[in-house]
Image (tube, rainbow, N blue to C red):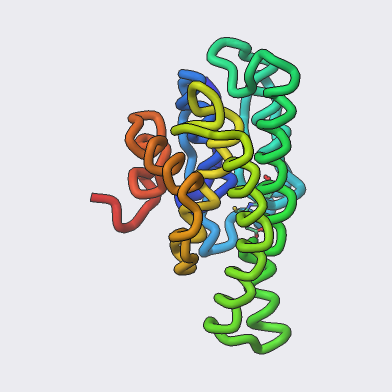
Length: 214
Ligand SMILES: N[C@@H](CCC(=O)N[C@@H](CS)C(=O)NCC(=O)O)C(=O)O
């Protein structure tokens, strides 16, 4: 069985949990404690030199980097595809998913926020301003693109590659009090996804390493 080494609140780990659930693949979730920097310890970095989660242990290999993992999962396990069949639809899904993965995740990642605090002495309020600035810079055009596409509850007929990336980013944005009131498309897609059992099982609230799990 595949093993997903992750952290409940890590958005990249959340991407993989959603993907595995949508594809109906069995996996064991192995918590990695980011609060104690377990991801930087020798036991972990000898398996994933990037020192980040998620690490996907699957088919005889330790696989790093969430976007590569998602693309690999869809190629190696074509059943229940995350990416649509039509080449132009695949392009649209990637356009939006990679906007999140490449423009948003990097400046908003924990080591960047810690660097702002520790090296530049920025306060939590200032870091919140930084966080919401970069979010708006990519989420506003993303919302505009969804409006152009006339999107319904999902980008296509069912959730896939795009929603796998969107939901974790929205979850993080809410933790930083981002205002989604002018983003009805993103909000509608988020709500439609959260109503589905696959997304509920993958949610940070329901992970064994969440200390507030009920
Ligand atoms: N580009 C990587 C980013 C992974 C990443 O930054 N993961 C975060 C959690 S969301 C992490 O492990 N942070 C801890 C650290 O970098 O020390 C991916 O997509 O997998």
